[in-house]
Length: 190
Image 1: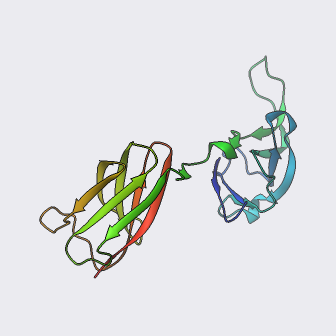
Image 2: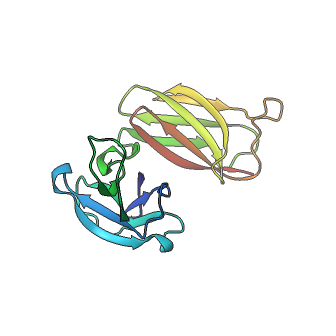
């Protein structure tokens, strides 16, 4: 199972189909710690075309989630140390371990000129001196250009067909990412 942040305070859960038997339902368990996991809701497996669930009423702070499938016919493994079981639980995901946070240290990313026609400068202002990865992607998220740069620096960009980094006219995104944070701004090509 995987988790990602939804809109506002919501959390999106995504999981694969269970293999071994066809479950009737997926139970979604939630807790604020590993020791207090309780049933949040049940979803009919036939209704789970995409195997996902959005928790719109998530508690503030850290939350733990787990998917459980219940086997309606008793399963008796051949190992003598195991008796029988009726449910299988997924890995546990934790909202505190999700992603890289939008930056509070990268104060500004300035691009000039913006819109541009042939070249532009990216100026990064940060309260920390770090090495960052600078990525330029198109509107569909395809990576077009990537380089490393120090925060608090200027990067001169001359993207061209010769270097196979030419940008098409339209909207692009420049993301500056350090080990723990990122910031994204819009770039327009005339």
